[in-house]
Length: 68
Image (tube, rainbow, N blue to C red; front, side, top):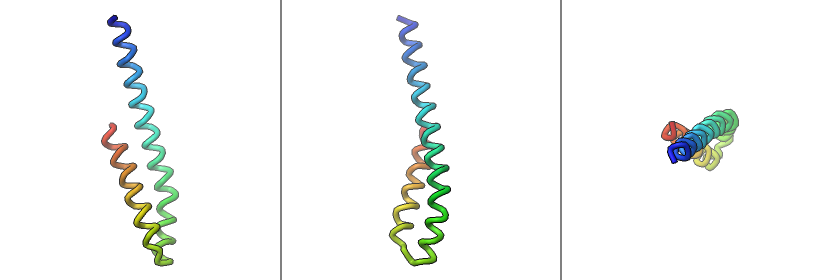
């Protein structure tokens, strides 16, 4: 029984680490794409792009930091 509990804890830890890693990479890749997009949107006056990109990045960052 103790071995099964340990296995479940290890699996839960693995899932948490995997999710944290995926969130980190999603945030980094999203920032790489969003920064130039936001810059161009500012130059062209397309505030809707900024209104979507910035909250999405903040949401990813918040999820990533709250998970770790």
